[in-house]
Image 1: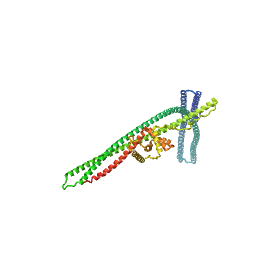
Image 2: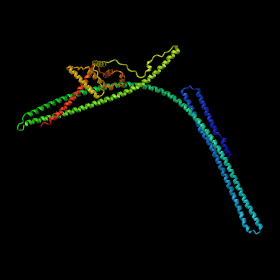
Image 3: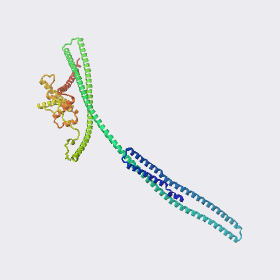
Image 4: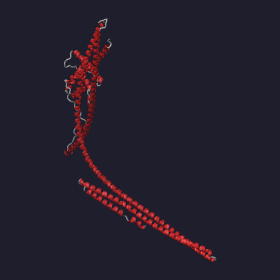
Amino acid sequence: MEEFGKDPEEAPGPENQQERSSLQSGEADEEVHEDVNEEPHNQQPEDKKVEESEKMVLSQRILTLQRELPEQIRNIQTAADAKESMRRTEQEKACRLRLELLENDVKSSQEKFGEIIGEWSTANQKITPQELQELLNNQQKLSSALLDDKKRVINELQQELKVGDDRYVKDLRKHAEELGLMMERVEDQIKTLKMAYREELAHIQRINQQESEVLLTTDKAEWEQRLKALWDKELDRLMQRQEKVEEYNEKVEDVVLETRDQFNDKQLGHNEKLMAMVRERKQLEAASMSTQRILTVIPKPDGPDNLIQRKLRLVRKEMLNLKAQYSSQQKCITQMKRQLTDRRNRIVQQHGHTQKKIQHFAVADVKKFEQMWLMIEDEVKQLVERVLVLDSIIYKQHLGLAWERPHMAFMGRSGLIQPQKQTQSPTHQAVTQVIRTQDLQGSQRMTDASVGPMLKTDAESVTTEVHKAESEGGAEVEERKLSNEALKTVMELLCDELGFLFEEKFLSQLAPLEEEEQAVMKLSSLFSAFGISKREVPRLAQVLLKHKNQKRLQTEVRRDTDDGCSGQSLFQHFP
């Protein structure tokens, strides 16, 4: 037991191995760090080799610690197990000896007890008191000897129990000491492992920081290159979008003009056919009325006149046929008119959708362009400031001259450069001339024709003025020259109705101008966008007035048809 108690204290082999391994790893780390410090400016492959060697040394050190530290705990555990096995063998041996002692004692006590009982059986044979006294003395000696043996056995057992208690106390103390020693060793092992893990963590963090710095520099350079390429692509896309928007605007304008001309031509043809049918219907009505008058004037004969009845039937059949033809033609005309109006509405809606899309993309492109402009402008200003600082240093330090900051008004500005006023186009001059002549005549008129119903009323007023001028001037001329007042009203209505085509930026630029100048600028921009020259302005006004006259004729035809329907209802009362 004492030898096993001394084993853990006298055999610190694993601790020595641990210390040696830690010293070796520490020396290896110091050597690696010295190598790294001696060559700080080596190439990147050498740095990678050094880092890999440091990783290998740290990993080997941690592996040795993980392999050796549990061995120490296992050695302490095996020593404790050996002590426990020896204690158990000694305890079994003591139990066996104790059992043998008890068995021998039982045998001897049984023999002595048998002798005592045997002598008591012979006491009846004794007669004299002396023999009885001797027998009693012998019995007392035997019983006292038996009691002495029992006391001796009890004393031996008590002594053995006391020795076992003392040994148990000593074992508890040794176990406590061994447990404390094992706890100290475990704590030392934990500390060494913590130190090793911290060193490895610091090394890994250092390597990761270096790698992250390298990656950051490479990613930053790549990001700058890609950003530059993206800026170039965005500029190209912006230019392409602007070109596409211009092409789409031209196509939409062409389609709108073509559909409008086709619709006007078809409407004129239908109106002419309708007027011809109305004239035929009126002629038939007049013929029927004359026949009825003749029939009323001619006296009826006494007998039935089959000839007159036959003629009346024929006339009624012709009237019914004409009514059926008129109703069918009217249905066809209404159906065709409905189809044309639906088609026109669809085209207008498509035009509105395309205009909204164009405006949306234009606004988005303008915002992107403004953001890029501001960013590039900030960079340019920073570069200008750096150049000014270098210029001042050169003037003051190298040349020894006084430096004055040059006047740079563009440094205080920000945002896009506003376009200058363009030269007046011929259409612009024509519109300004018309408006000025009208103002000189003294007939200024304010129109708010941004809504559909107001447009109709103003157009009617324009047509009435034109008709008055024509009635006063006589017959129309071939070119149908218009008065300045009518031309001005048409231009103002055109400007108000096409106001949705103007951008908000353009309108904000026109805000400080007067109303006359605003109208002139709007019309000049519209005519330049539509490609309308100075000579084509009167023709445009004539087309608009012609369209209004066609609408008026349609309304008159509708009224005539209503009157015709009322006349047909009168025919039904004929006998």
